[in-house]
Length: 216
Image 1 (cartoon, rainbow, N blue to C red):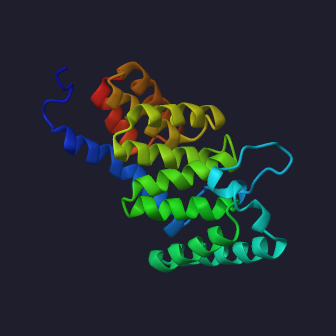
Image 2: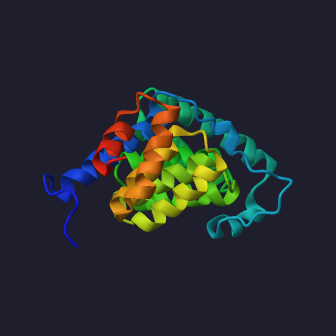
């Protein structure tokens, strides 16, 4: 099938699509943003299927481990915001080692992996965080961004469909969804997504340029 964008190579387009989202998500860890990492605490009152890696360690997680893991997580988040990502990664690793159910640590570590272009590791951690907190937008958006970077466009679109239902007022989700469907060649869904992103955030340059590309 001929490329719908003959004036640019697909490699150039992938960089255009991927960069704003990757930078935006890393901004969560490095600069802080509207995402509430506290919202990623497991919902104890709902039966959930924990990640397989965590299931084996269930009996080893004590109240003391949980408390210590939370301290390491807080330290890691502070280090990440200061730009000390290597030190932050060490702290997140300690937190996850102590408490494999610490969704905040898994999510924070995933963001660092994503910023280092280690997308397979990022997907694994985003998936674990999502398993602990189904329907939370942050892990879904993060995993979709790494899927886009890995060329797994259908998987990214599925995550973004779910994320857009969970939080229909999240402009970043709609922009990412537009990028996914644009890469799948579905201009109608791409245009609809970009339009929603622009309606929510009129100065969203990625959404506006995407809308221009798909003729929405």
